[in-house]
Image (cartoon, rainbow, N blue to C red; front, top):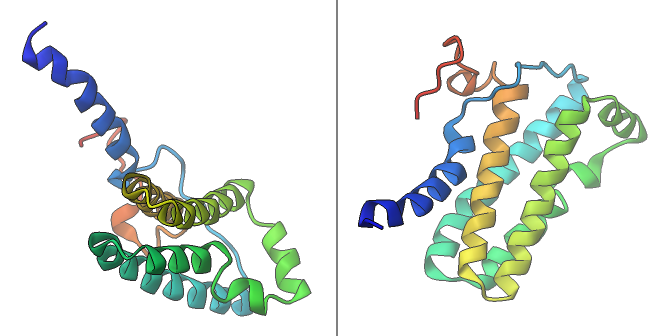
Length: 163
């Protein structure tokens, strides 16, 4: 077996892991129709998540497990949404597409796993779940918020994918 053949499985794994985060989706762009009140709460939540995600980078790089775990917990349990949702907003959320709800549930589950990995002092798994969080953001934004993130909108390239 040549050295190139030995490296191919590792390269394939890296490409598989990096593949989904390219910002391109095989799914069509869906538009969410939200009330102004829920839109405002969602925007506040997204801004809080953005700050949390940005704070994770130096925390991960410096091995600050406590900061990673605390941020993961905050993201998992939502910053604003769970605290300020009215019964009407909760009902409206239940009417959103199942794909959106599934992405949201996965995102929050990944945040919990990130926090758990930090508490278990497993830097490799922390990095994995940070990737999964980022990938979930890209997947959701490309499918449900392409108007706000046009660079993440699916390419119209007749099935050609360039990585």
